[in-house]
Length: 77
Image 1 (spheres, rainbow, N blue to C red):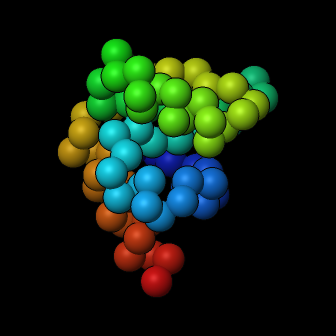
Image 2 (image 1 turned 90 degrees about the vertical axis):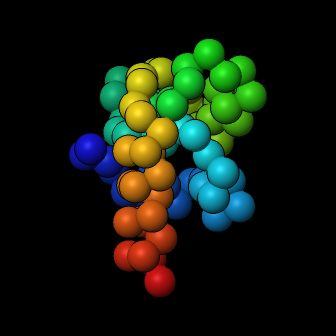
């Protein structure tokens, strides 16, 4: 999954550890955010809070989301 890793810095570490959503890229002044479950209103609201410029929902597997966060955490240490 191609991800704009700079967007991950906007999510505090405590949220990244449990997040089932992942910001992917900027598009039309909004952030494309992939959700493991796009019907999870708590995750949707949390992402909207993190990215006040607005979000464009997308879908990704929970495993793919966790893999990106793990790579990010390893790279940022």
